[in-house]
Amino acid sequence: MPQVEYLKQNNKIKASRANRIFILCALLVFIAFPSFAIEEQVTRKNIFKSAALENDLRSKMVTYSGVIDYDSVLQAAVDNSYDIKTSQVNIEISKQRLSGAKREYIPDLNVRVNTEYNKGLDDNSQGIRTVNGVIINGATRFQDSVSVNLQYTLLDYGIKKQHVNIASFDIIQKETVLVQTLRDLKLQILDLYTRILITYFELENLKTEYTLQKELLSMQERLYRAGLCSKIEVKQTEADLNSVQIKIENTNLGFAELLAELSFYTNTGYSTSLENVKPFTQKNPMDLNLDEIDYTKSSEYISYQKEIDKKHSELSILKRQRLPQVAMYSGYSIYGTDKGSFSSSASDMRQSNIAVGLSTNLGVTEQFKQTPKIKELELQINSLQIEQARNVSNFFKEVNRTKQLIGVYEVEKLKNDEFKMVLDTKLKMLERLDNKRLINKTDLIFQQIQNNRQNTEFKIIEQKAVAQSEKLKYLLEDVNALGAIGINNI
Image 1 (spheres, rainbow, N blue to C red):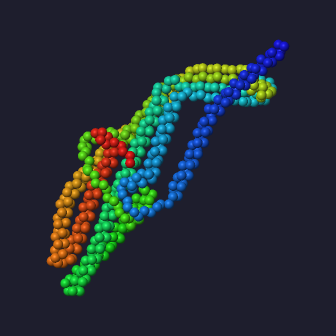
Image 2: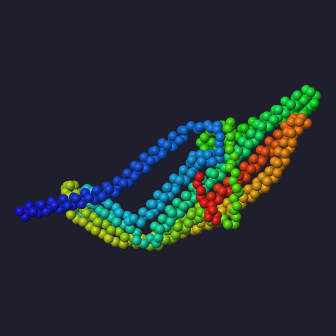
Image 3: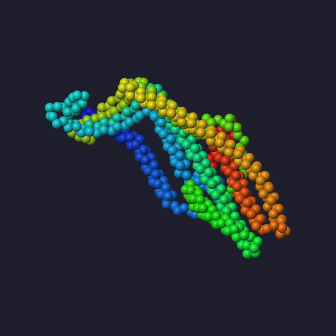
């Protein structure tokens, strides 16, 4: 009976240890499985995104011949901008880096399951020996073990915090890059649309002038046959007509090139026979005092400042790594051995072990190795500060130049308004005289051509003024001037 009780108790102990092994193995699978699931999910997302990108690249460009306006063109350019999409993805990447930096505070926990068969080739050697620092097990046996280890750095002098700071600065920097990318795209589309609009005005003016010149030539030919006009005047009008025709062809070619350039941004083809290119909406010029603008809130300043802050954190990490690092470690292990059976060694894990300790690590040679790196970072910080000052200065100069151009265009518009009144008055007077047949029809046509040219110039100056006002708004979108200007996405 005592032997039976002993066997039952021994079986219970083996079952208990087997259960503990099963639980530890299940824990290992539970910890490892989410990483495989996440990897599979990311892989599927990448496949779907690659397929969407391939379909996007294969999509055919639609040719448009209707009416275009600046707002719709700008929106299409923003929607089709790969630079903006890349900047948005980079922000998400930086957020993941921040998440990873925060997880450095989590202790390192490892679960290890080990099974081994050791065969001693020398029958006389049954024990464990150490040769030149190498542990040699001379016994023949099956060995199994399960261990749980925990390690955490207790004293790192704020290195983990600096890693979090670097990731946080990187997010702000990437967001600033997105603002700059959007602003630069707006400025590019604004400049391109202004050139398209001016070319469209010039093309319409040339078409009208061609019609008037053709009418003038027909009239002069009749006068020549009647002996009231010289042959030289007729030939001069023919030369002027041919010159206008050549200008129309050249201007139309330049118009096509500008529309092709616009298609690069909007992914839409445009016909040169557009119904209309709408002018900019009239806006009042900004009443702005440049001395009151806080340029430290501009994207030029913030982008470089966050890069400088990142370098300062990297410099702090290098200096703190030269100090002794104190870490705590602990481990719990259960193990078993058997000379002839693997199953017996796995189920007979009666022996266990627990260890707790502190470790201190000081890299002596790192003190010398990191000195050049520290000096390099200090120089990089100085270089970034110089670049920051230069870019902020250039930004200020561009804002100031744009504001001055707006003033110049506004003065020019006032002069043009006065001149336009004079031209309109003269044209109306000639029309009245022509109705009474007191002048030659040719005099009226000459004045119509002149008025048409001047009106086109007036419209171009007017649109340039509006475009410069829009440019100033874009330049200051990311600057909080007196709380009135903020970052505005389209």
